Length: 104
Image 1: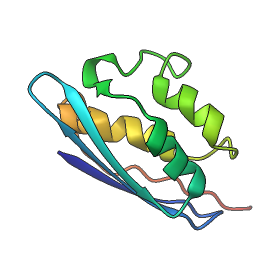
Image 2: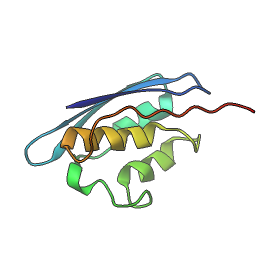
Image 3: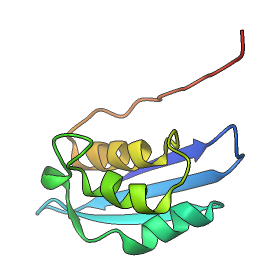
């Protein structure tokens, strides 16, 4: 199991993603969010196999469905969903990812 917290700075919305991957690599996602668009995305995500989440951003079903629901192009939640699945499946190591943006 893996758990990810996302706090988007611009909109202030918070999202928690939990992924459980079984022995056959089937993914159970539980997504809770303050964001209506992320909640809508969570409702339409189909059953996923951790080994078939996509090789590129364009062929990822998560990004394809996010494109239909999320209006803010730089939302980090779709990437966080993919990362959470990878960690839960043992495809990637868990570690923190940080994005800090500031005017200079």
